[in-house]
Image 1: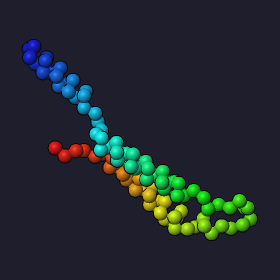
Image 2: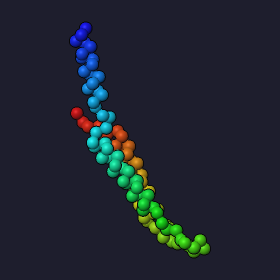
Image 3: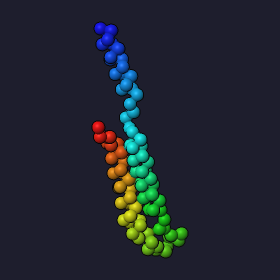
Image 4: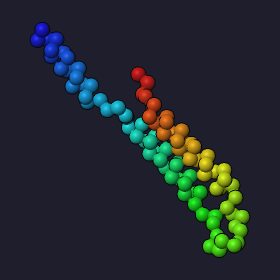
Length: 88
């Protein structure tokens, strides 16, 4: 009976020491956040100081295509970061 209690206690202590995420998970989370931030930064601008003047830079490749792709890639990396598991 005493052996069984010691074994259970050791298993509980070992399980408490394990973190849910590894270093790789955290690196992927940081990479995803950086991709999302870069996409948001690239989306900034394109406006005009005078509301009566049209600024065609508002519809360039960077703001309409590149930045949304980077943001979506960032979210995809975040999903991978959550589900990433080291192969045994």
